Length: 310
Image 1 (cartoon, rainbow, N blue to C red):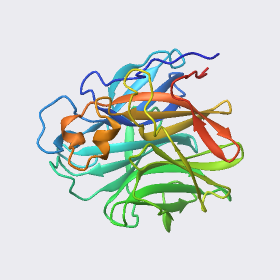
Image 2 (image 1 turned 45 degrees about the vertical axis):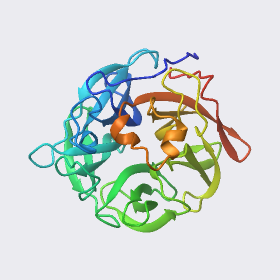
Image 3 (image 1 turned 90 degrees about the vertical axis):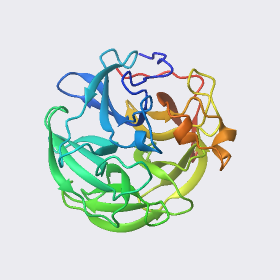
Protein backbone atom coordinates (compact mmCIF):
# COMPACT_ATOMS: atom_id res chain seq x y z
CA UNK A 1 0.00 0.00 0.00
CA UNK A 2 1.45 3.34 -1.04
CA UNK A 3 1.80 6.08 1.54
CA UNK A 4 3.06 9.65 1.33
CA UNK A 5 6.01 9.84 3.74
CA UNK A 6 6.54 12.90 5.93
CA UNK A 7 8.99 15.60 4.85
CA UNK A 8 11.37 15.77 6.46
CA UNK A 9 11.29 12.05 7.06
CA UNK A 10 13.21 12.39 10.35
CA UNK A 11 15.08 14.92 12.48
CA UNK A 12 17.26 13.85 15.39
CA UNK A 13 15.47 15.25 18.49
CA UNK A 14 18.68 15.34 20.54
CA UNK A 15 21.30 16.91 18.25
CA UNK A 16 19.30 17.79 15.06
CA UNK A 17 22.13 16.45 12.91
CA UNK A 18 20.92 13.18 11.34
CA UNK A 19 23.06 12.32 8.29
CA UNK A 20 24.44 9.38 6.28
CA UNK A 21 21.43 7.03 6.72
CA UNK A 22 21.19 3.29 6.13
CA UNK A 23 17.91 1.37 6.32
CA UNK A 24 17.23 -2.21 7.40
CA UNK A 25 14.31 -4.41 8.44
CA UNK A 26 14.49 -5.43 12.10
CA UNK A 27 13.50 -9.10 12.01
CA UNK A 28 12.94 -9.29 15.76
CA UNK A 29 10.75 -6.20 16.19
CA UNK A 30 9.16 -6.36 12.73
CA UNK A 31 9.93 -2.68 12.24
CA UNK A 32 12.05 -0.61 9.86
CA UNK A 33 15.20 0.91 11.34
CA UNK A 34 17.41 3.76 10.18
CA UNK A 35 20.96 3.91 11.46
CA UNK A 36 22.63 7.28 10.88
CA UNK A 37 25.51 9.56 11.82
CA UNK A 38 24.28 11.63 14.79
CA UNK A 39 26.11 14.92 14.23
CA UNK A 40 25.96 17.24 17.25
CA UNK A 41 24.56 20.10 15.18
CA UNK A 42 22.87 22.14 17.92
CA UNK A 43 25.68 22.15 20.48
CA UNK A 44 28.91 23.99 21.20
CA UNK A 45 31.37 23.85 18.34
CA UNK A 46 35.05 24.58 17.64
CA UNK A 47 35.88 24.25 13.97
CA UNK A 48 34.13 21.05 12.87
CA UNK A 49 34.10 19.41 16.30
CA UNK A 50 30.34 18.87 16.03
CA UNK A 51 31.03 16.33 13.26
CA UNK A 52 33.21 14.34 15.67
CA UNK A 53 32.49 12.62 18.96
CA UNK A 54 29.41 11.36 17.13
CA UNK A 55 27.50 8.17 17.84
CA UNK A 56 25.35 6.15 15.45
CA UNK A 57 21.74 7.16 15.96
CA UNK A 58 18.72 4.89 15.54
CA UNK A 59 15.18 5.72 14.38
CA UNK A 60 12.44 3.15 13.85
CA UNK A 61 9.05 2.96 12.15
CA UNK A 62 6.32 0.50 13.08
CA UNK A 63 3.80 1.90 10.58
CA UNK A 64 5.55 1.26 7.25
CA UNK A 65 7.39 4.57 7.17
CA UNK A 66 4.54 6.93 8.07
CA UNK A 67 6.32 8.05 11.22
CA UNK A 68 9.73 7.55 12.82
CA UNK A 69 10.74 7.61 16.47
CA UNK A 70 14.19 8.17 17.96
CA UNK A 71 15.46 5.05 19.76
CA UNK A 72 18.86 6.15 21.01
CA UNK A 73 22.32 5.17 19.78
CA UNK A 74 24.07 1.94 18.86
CA UNK A 75 26.32 0.48 21.56
CA UNK A 76 29.63 0.35 19.68
CA UNK A 77 32.69 -0.26 21.86
CA UNK A 78 36.22 -0.17 20.46
CA UNK A 79 38.54 1.75 22.78
CA UNK A 80 38.06 3.99 25.85
CA UNK A 81 37.13 7.64 25.59
CA UNK A 82 34.76 9.78 23.56
CA UNK A 83 35.31 8.77 19.95
CA UNK A 84 33.80 9.25 16.51
CA UNK A 85 31.56 6.94 14.49
CA UNK A 86 30.34 7.86 11.00
CA UNK A 87 28.36 6.50 8.07
CA UNK A 88 27.12 3.04 9.09
CA UNK A 89 26.41 0.28 6.59
CA UNK A 90 24.13 -2.37 8.13
CA UNK A 91 23.15 -5.61 6.38
CA UNK A 92 21.61 -8.98 7.25
CA UNK A 93 23.70 -11.90 5.96
CA UNK A 94 24.70 -15.41 6.97
CA UNK A 95 22.21 -15.43 9.86
CA UNK A 96 23.37 -12.23 11.58
CA UNK A 97 23.51 -8.47 11.24
CA UNK A 98 26.76 -6.85 10.12
CA UNK A 99 27.73 -3.22 10.56
CA UNK A 100 30.64 -1.60 8.73
CA UNK A 101 31.26 1.84 10.21
CA UNK A 102 33.87 4.59 9.99
CA UNK A 103 35.87 5.19 13.17
CA UNK A 104 38.12 8.06 14.33
CA UNK A 105 39.78 8.33 17.70
CA UNK A 106 38.64 11.23 19.88
CA UNK A 107 36.95 14.50 18.89
CA UNK A 108 39.08 16.45 16.39
CA UNK A 109 38.14 20.08 15.69
CA UNK A 110 39.62 19.89 12.16
CA UNK A 111 39.31 17.36 9.34
CA UNK A 112 42.22 15.35 10.70
CA UNK A 113 43.05 12.02 12.24
CA UNK A 114 43.34 8.45 11.04
CA UNK A 115 40.12 7.01 9.65
CA UNK A 116 39.35 3.30 9.72
CA UNK A 117 36.44 1.01 8.95
CA UNK A 118 35.36 -1.29 11.78
CA UNK A 119 33.28 -4.46 11.48
CA UNK A 120 30.63 -5.32 14.08
CA UNK A 121 28.09 -8.17 14.28
CA UNK A 122 24.80 -8.48 16.14
CA UNK A 123 21.93 -10.89 16.65
CA UNK A 124 19.32 -8.21 17.39
CA UNK A 125 20.59 -4.78 16.13
CA UNK A 126 21.01 -3.62 19.73
CA UNK A 127 24.02 -5.54 21.01
CA UNK A 128 27.11 -5.31 18.83
CA UNK A 129 30.37 -7.25 19.00
CA UNK A 130 33.44 -5.69 17.40
CA UNK A 131 35.21 -7.98 14.94
CA UNK A 132 38.07 -5.52 14.42
CA UNK A 133 39.54 -3.11 11.90
CA UNK A 134 39.34 -3.98 8.19
CA UNK A 135 42.77 -3.40 6.58
CA UNK A 136 42.23 -1.43 3.38
CA UNK A 137 44.19 0.72 0.90
CA UNK A 138 45.18 3.49 3.33
CA UNK A 139 44.66 4.78 6.87
CA UNK A 140 42.15 7.40 5.74
CA UNK A 141 39.16 5.37 4.55
CA UNK A 142 35.48 6.13 5.23
CA UNK A 143 31.91 5.37 4.09
CA UNK A 144 31.66 1.60 3.64
CA UNK A 145 29.09 0.01 1.32
CA UNK A 146 28.68 -3.79 1.16
CA UNK A 147 26.76 -5.79 -1.44
CA UNK A 148 26.77 -9.41 -2.75
CA UNK A 149 28.28 -9.99 -6.21
CA UNK A 150 28.79 -13.06 -8.39
CA UNK A 151 30.60 -16.29 -7.42
CA UNK A 152 29.41 -16.14 -3.82
CA UNK A 153 31.52 -13.11 -3.03
CA UNK A 154 30.80 -9.88 -1.22
CA UNK A 155 32.21 -6.55 -2.20
CA UNK A 156 33.01 -3.53 -0.02
CA UNK A 157 33.29 -0.07 -1.58
CA UNK A 158 34.67 2.93 0.30
CA UNK A 159 36.14 6.40 -0.07
CA UNK A 160 39.94 6.57 0.14
CA UNK A 161 40.91 10.09 1.17
CA UNK A 162 44.60 9.40 0.54
CA UNK A 163 43.84 8.61 -3.09
CA UNK A 164 42.04 11.75 -4.30
CA UNK A 165 38.81 10.81 -2.48
CA UNK A 166 38.02 8.14 -5.07
CA UNK A 167 36.06 4.95 -4.49
CA UNK A 168 38.11 1.80 -3.90
CA UNK A 169 36.84 -1.75 -3.43
CA UNK A 170 37.67 -4.94 -1.54
CA UNK A 171 36.28 -8.48 -1.85
CA UNK A 172 35.42 -11.21 0.66
CA UNK A 173 33.93 -14.70 0.73
CA UNK A 174 32.86 -14.55 4.37
CA UNK A 175 32.29 -10.84 5.26
CA UNK A 176 35.17 -11.01 7.76
CA UNK A 177 38.34 -11.24 5.65
CA UNK A 178 38.79 -8.70 2.87
CA UNK A 179 41.21 -8.31 -0.04
CA UNK A 180 41.62 -4.90 -1.68
CA UNK A 181 41.01 -5.08 -5.44
CA UNK A 182 41.72 -1.43 -6.24
CA UNK A 183 40.19 1.80 -7.48
CA UNK A 184 36.80 1.71 -9.22
CA UNK A 185 35.38 5.25 -9.42
CA UNK A 186 37.92 7.95 -10.27
CA UNK A 187 36.21 10.54 -12.46
CA UNK A 188 35.92 13.07 -9.62
CA UNK A 189 36.37 13.39 -5.83
CA UNK A 190 33.33 12.13 -3.93
CA UNK A 191 32.16 10.18 -0.89
CA UNK A 192 29.39 7.89 0.33
CA UNK A 193 29.29 5.10 -2.29
CA UNK A 194 26.20 2.89 -2.11
CA UNK A 195 25.55 -0.12 -4.35
CA UNK A 196 22.32 -1.96 -5.19
CA UNK A 197 20.72 -3.93 -8.01
CA UNK A 198 17.65 -2.79 -9.96
CA UNK A 199 16.23 -3.90 -13.29
CA UNK A 200 19.06 -6.36 -13.94
CA UNK A 201 21.85 -3.80 -13.48
CA UNK A 202 24.14 -2.90 -10.63
CA UNK A 203 23.97 0.76 -9.65
CA UNK A 204 26.21 2.92 -7.50
CA UNK A 205 25.18 6.19 -5.91
CA UNK A 206 27.91 8.58 -4.71
CA UNK A 207 28.00 12.06 -3.20
CA UNK A 208 30.19 14.45 -5.26
CA UNK A 209 28.62 17.42 -3.40
CA UNK A 210 26.61 18.41 -6.51
CA UNK A 211 23.63 16.19 -5.96
CA UNK A 212 24.16 12.43 -6.10
CA UNK A 213 26.34 10.76 -8.72
CA UNK A 214 24.92 7.71 -10.53
CA UNK A 215 26.89 4.84 -12.10
CA UNK A 216 25.66 1.71 -13.90
CA UNK A 217 27.42 -1.66 -14.27
CA UNK A 218 26.73 -5.18 -15.49
CA UNK A 219 29.42 -6.75 -13.31
CA UNK A 220 29.75 -4.49 -10.22
CA UNK A 221 33.28 -3.64 -11.34
CA UNK A 222 33.24 -1.59 -14.56
CA UNK A 223 31.04 1.47 -14.13
CA UNK A 224 29.45 3.91 -16.58
CA UNK A 225 28.65 7.42 -15.35
CA UNK A 226 25.04 8.56 -15.68
CA UNK A 227 23.42 11.95 -14.95
CA UNK A 228 23.18 13.01 -11.32
CA UNK A 229 19.99 12.90 -9.28
CA UNK A 230 18.92 15.29 -6.50
CA UNK A 231 21.07 18.00 -8.07
CA UNK A 232 18.05 20.31 -8.35
CA UNK A 233 16.47 21.52 -5.07
CA UNK A 234 13.05 20.14 -4.20
CA UNK A 235 9.87 21.77 -2.94
CA UNK A 236 9.07 19.72 0.19
CA UNK A 237 9.91 20.97 3.68
CA UNK A 238 13.67 20.82 4.41
CA UNK A 239 14.23 19.56 0.85
CA UNK A 240 14.97 22.81 -0.98
CA UNK A 241 18.66 21.96 -1.42
CA UNK A 242 20.74 19.30 -3.14
CA UNK A 243 20.69 15.81 -1.64
CA UNK A 244 23.64 14.26 0.21
CA UNK A 245 25.14 10.89 1.22
CA UNK A 246 22.40 8.36 0.55
CA UNK A 247 21.35 4.74 1.02
CA UNK A 248 19.10 2.81 -1.36
CA UNK A 249 16.58 0.26 -0.11
CA UNK A 250 15.19 -2.06 -2.79
CA UNK A 251 11.88 -3.43 -1.54
CA UNK A 252 9.25 -5.26 -3.61
CA UNK A 253 11.15 -4.33 -6.78
CA UNK A 254 11.13 -0.61 -6.02
CA UNK A 255 14.16 1.48 -5.04
CA UNK A 256 13.87 4.05 -2.26
CA UNK A 257 16.58 6.66 -1.84
CA UNK A 258 17.16 7.70 1.78
CA UNK A 259 19.35 10.81 1.90
CA UNK A 260 20.09 13.87 4.02
CA UNK A 261 19.93 17.60 3.41
CA UNK A 262 21.40 20.78 4.86
CA UNK A 263 18.04 22.64 4.79
CA UNK A 264 19.49 26.09 5.50
CA UNK A 265 22.18 26.03 2.81
CA UNK A 266 21.41 27.21 -0.73
CA UNK A 267 23.04 25.67 -3.80
CA UNK A 268 24.75 28.99 -4.52
CA UNK A 269 26.24 29.05 -1.02
CA UNK A 270 27.61 25.53 -1.34
CA UNK A 271 29.29 26.44 -4.63
CA UNK A 272 30.93 29.52 -3.09
CA UNK A 273 34.43 28.50 -1.89
CA UNK A 274 34.39 31.26 0.74
CA UNK A 275 31.16 30.07 2.36
CA UNK A 276 31.81 27.90 5.43
CA UNK A 277 28.56 25.96 5.19
CA UNK A 278 29.53 23.06 7.46
CA UNK A 279 30.38 25.29 10.42
CA UNK A 280 27.58 27.87 10.14
CA UNK A 281 24.66 25.84 8.80
CA UNK A 282 24.95 22.57 10.64
CA UNK A 283 21.37 21.28 10.92
CA UNK A 284 20.55 18.25 8.76
CA UNK A 285 17.37 16.30 8.02
CA UNK A 286 16.65 12.88 6.52
CA UNK A 287 14.42 12.51 3.47
CA UNK A 288 13.22 9.73 1.16
CA UNK A 289 12.31 9.62 -2.53
CA UNK A 290 11.90 6.87 -5.12
CA UNK A 291 14.43 6.03 -7.81
CA UNK A 292 13.08 4.65 -11.08
CA UNK A 293 14.90 3.07 -13.98
CA UNK A 294 14.36 4.83 -17.31
CA UNK A 295 16.26 3.06 -20.06
CA UNK A 296 19.90 3.09 -18.99
CA UNK A 297 19.38 5.89 -16.44
CA UNK A 298 17.89 6.45 -13.01
CA UNK A 299 15.40 9.25 -12.44
CA UNK A 300 14.03 10.67 -9.20
CA UNK A 301 11.06 12.97 -8.64
CA UNK A 302 11.73 14.21 -5.12
CA UNK A 303 8.61 16.40 -5.07
CA UNK A 304 6.02 13.65 -5.60
CA UNK A 305 6.93 10.81 -3.29
CA UNK A 306 4.99 7.65 -2.47
CA UNK A 307 6.50 4.57 -0.84
CA UNK A 308 5.33 1.06 0.01
CA UNK A 309 7.24 -0.50 2.89
CA UNK A 310 4.53 -3.03 3.76
